[in-house]
Length: 112
Image (cartoon, rainbow, N blue to C red):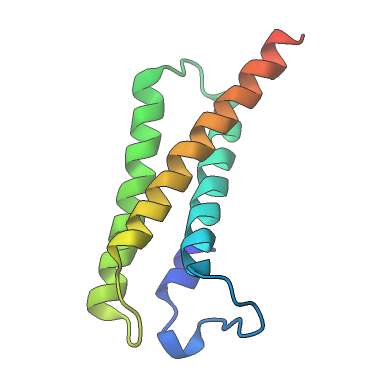
């Protein structure tokens, strides 16, 4: 879903005119990547050895994914632009999503 929404031409992107929240697009970026990293971490329970290296690879891959989509928007998608602060929102959402997912999993494990 992130890829499809990111690669739509500017004229085809959903417009929300009735909501007037400053920097709404940054919040949307944050929450899309927050949920992406959270889903990946929750799904990774099936992976055997989850250590710091595993999580760093996950974070790095998602951040590179976000940077790549912003770069494609900037260079190839009509009516779209790649923005540095979108990359920051994506990356922050990724990291916080990972941390919260790990805290939830840790809480589940200790309450058993």
